[in-house]
Each structure stands twice: as structure tokens, then as C-alpha cells.
Picture 1 (cartoon, rainbow, N blue to C red):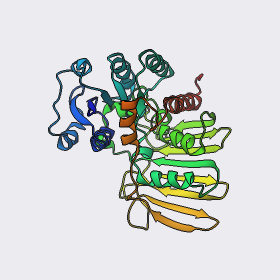
Picture 2: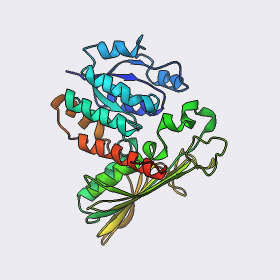
Picture 3: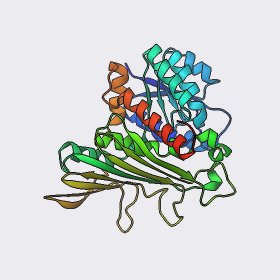
Length: 335
């Protein structure tokens, strides 16, 4: 039987990739609803013109034929909808951040336990990037030995004129570490094989946008686990001359070599998804643009078979927990 999904909240453009990849994995997109008319709606309708808008979110949750709910509304609202969806018997795939407070995370954990539903997050900087697929294959092959450190860089372009009011409201988006840095925390845990970690350093700042005090435009985190170490930097400083939204990079250090990912641009070279591999036998740049994106097909299979081949529930919870702890540390609040 074909999996059927609907979307609640399309306030972030990430919904475009989430929905398109679910369709490519064989699922049917059967409906959507969002509060008001966000600026993302035009692009959404251009991509999915035949998917009907429901009269209400509740109508989607009440439909027994819908198996999965995608969430990409305002970040502070996603956890509440996730709980409602799971209580209605639906599995959930959320945009990041899936929650913005520890209390929300606790409520989600309790609901997963009570309902047996799956709550997952599309960490798109891993799941929608072919270069990461190729890097994961190389690591699994032992190309750089045991991974002991990741260095994750997540710069973004501000695009001020396109941003809604909630983008500049710290409580609405959860803080820069809860939001953006969750990608790099996910990659640290994944590539080092860590099931837990400690936040040893975290800071946030607003260096370039004093007229928007709710915006955090810089953040950093240091992580350590029994498997390795990680450093993360995220920001909203991408210069206008760069031909894409951010020069996202990941360096994976192993005991026998290293891998560097130049995900979305490689300044001075053509193309995207370049993987640099250096070890005892090879020193080369690999074009990984044709690598597959296996997460979504695995996720569909997990929904059908109630397995965890795409990503474990414990991993999703741990990424959220660490991002929230880092945010609290950076802001000087109790964890």
C-alpha cells in the first residue's frame, strides 16, 4: 500500500525538499494546511499545484487514510503539532528544529512512548546532500580509519527582505544553535558513531545586526564524546558575491586520513558536492553530485515495517537534547 502524507505548516522553504523527496521515495502527497499566507506559499504552489489545501489542520489529522505528517511551520509551533499528529495516529517528519524548548522535547518523548509513533527530523544538510552520502560510504569502507573529529561549518545568507517577522524573534526560532547547529550536531554524532556527547563550549552573538536584537547571527559549539571531538560554527554572514546561500563544509578527521566536503559551492571550481579524500594511498577530489539520497526511501520502509534503518529515534532525541543544552549554555541559562 502506498504511503500517504500531508503537510501542516509551510512557513520554511525546507518543505519544498521534504515533500519532493517523499514523493520521489514513492509516497503520495494528499493535502496541506498552513496558518495564513506565508511568503513561501507561491513557491510551494509552483512545485505542488495539484495538492489540495485542507480547510484545517484538524481535518488532515482526522483523515484515517493519512499516514504521515510533515511539519515546516514556525519552529516554536512544530512540537505542538507533532504531539497532536502522533495522538491522532500519524507518524511525523519535521523540519529542524523539531522543538525549541526542553519542555517540548519531553512532551514529544512522552508522546512517542505512549503512542508508538515515529517522530523524525529531516536533517537536510545530511539527508539532501549527495556529498554526505559519498563521504559516509568512504568512512564505512575504512578510507580514513576511525573518525575522531568533525569540523562543521554552516554559514547562511540572511536575505533580510524575504524573512518573516518570526525569523527575528528568538523565542519563535529557538536560537541559532537550536536551529542551524542541529545539522552539525547530527553529523558529529553520525560520523563519530557517538550515541551521546557533552557540550564543552557554546556561544552565540549578534555582531552585525544590532537593529534586530532577537537575531543571533553567530554561534559556535564544541562537543566531546567517548568516540571523538567536534567543533561547529554557524552564522548569517554569507556575502552577496557567493553564488549560493552558504559555503557549507564538513571536515572529517580520521586516524588514517581526512575527508573534506564542499557541499553547495567550491570556490574556484565548477559544480557542487565535491569530496576531498586524503589518506595513505589517495589524494584526490571526487565529484559526488551523482550519489544517491537514501534517507527517504529508508524512512518510508521504516514507516511500513516499524524499523529504524534511516535514523534511530534515540539519535533524533539526542541531537535535539544537545542543541537545546548548547543554546542554554550559550545564553547563560540553566540547562
